[in-house]
View 1 (tube, rainbow over the protein chains, first blue to last red):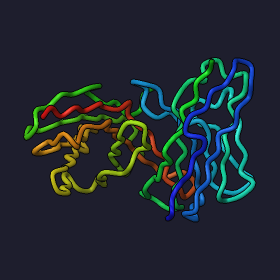
View 2: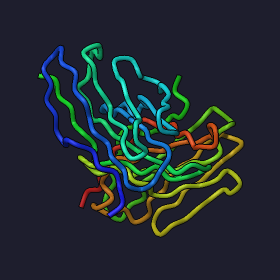
View 3: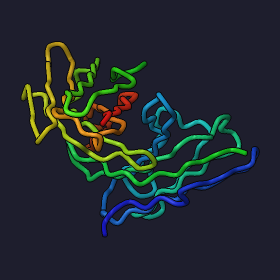
View 4: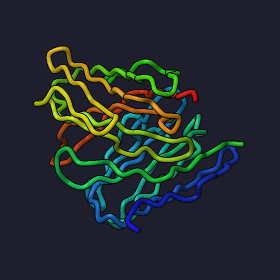
Length: 113
Length: 114
């Protein structure tokens, strides 16, 4: 089945630790995105990548880092510099082109304990 | 700066009623307006979308109405069902280096009571 796989589904982190969220897609999409979802805040863009080995900051990139070494993979690291990391994180991918559909993974819920 | 404003934040509708969610945008560079539906614990999925050269698009019980001059668009769910209970996000898209870049509203949590 084609789609986007995010892992893990739930993640617990101690304060001061870095954690990495996985996102893999087999849709052959060029563009991949990371969003953060908080109650009442909608989907806010963290980082996006339109091509391998290149990525751009979104609206709330501070405290996060990404890499894009393979077309299929776009991991997100939540660093200790992110002051309020508890949230639902969503990965998405899109084909190159205009007016294309965004396909989302099932999300990772990160909780700082 | 909120580029896409969505209202209401939450909505309760009786089964069989009409659910209406409204969105407004500011940037005239937006050229595509999709709606996404999200069930609890899941990722959003595309529900229906409209281009600004048409004023209405209907797919089954779901209709988008678009008013280009007012920079507003809305989602109407006819004959609302309990299975429609979900969070709905409007979005606006514009071109960025050959790709679409989406800006989302803050979402509307819809509850359809049996």
